[in-house]
Amino acid sequence: MASLIDAVRLSKSFGDVKALSGFSISVERGKIAGVVGPDGAGKTTAMRILSTVSAPDSGELYIDGRNAVSDYRLARQSLGYMSQKFGLYIDMTVEENIAFFADLHGVPSKEIKKRSDVLLKASGMFNFAGRAAGKLSGGMKQKLALCCALVHEPKVLILDEPTNGVDPVSRREFWQILNRFASGGTAVVYATSYLDEAERCNTVNLMNKGTIIASGTIEHLKGIPDIDVIEIKGERVRDLMKSFPGNLGRLWSFGSALHIHASKNSGALEFLKSNLASGYEASVIEPTLEDIFTYLTSGEGGDE
Image 1: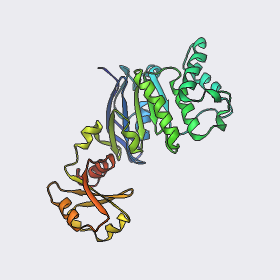
Image 2: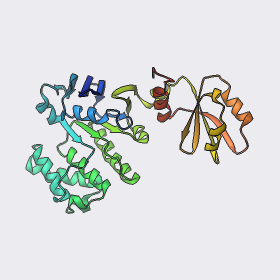
Image 3: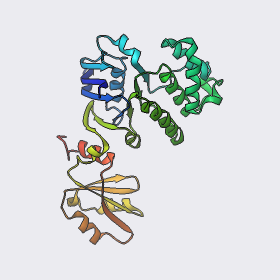
Image 4: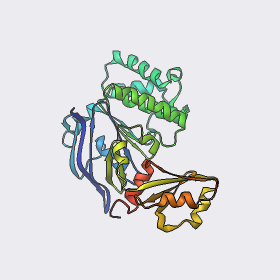
């Protein structure tokens, strides 16, 4: 299947700061590719280049078969882009914002009302069509921004941390809209720092310091760490960190549990089961995305 997005070794610097280095990604029709990493990893720089808002210093970018570096105006016809910040017109109503962006993208006037109604119903905002955008909640503003990015029915959608700071219910509704359009054939690149959102994507690209450090399906990524991930649960589990034997492996705090990155066949699990006080439970688990990211950036699986 031909890819709608092909980025090859994109790089970008701001003065002496290398914001992006060798960024490559390929996304097929109907697929959602996650770009995941902490603040400062280079996600926004990558999204701005993919959406043709910013030009790369080097590398190649093709959107729907068009050279998006040399012919970015033509490539934009296939693009929808949603930035981190709410960029709509707060004094205009929900419906007026959608109509404005539809007109901006050349949607035929007779089509605008029909497309607007479809998007408003899909987003659960039909009853808010007449409300000023500035009076919407944070989650509703993000859903409106998504509607405006989709109204011209782009083949490619670039989203830069669209649910950052949004409540869990609105995030779930946002993903319902997104999945609906992806199932219709839209290729999506979704930048996020939320690891749980990354698991909703077809493929995941882990970023750190401007570079993709690992990519593939969740199943592929879980096979990368050459370690046993041991999880310890129990009340006051963090108290164990004070006296934890360092020779068992690297110890990390993961929410209400502890994770140990132990060498395979090291006997760490058997030691813990024999020596942990009652009330604690230890077991080998599949590595989470956070385990994988930690493994790759802590020196266990890389050069750092």
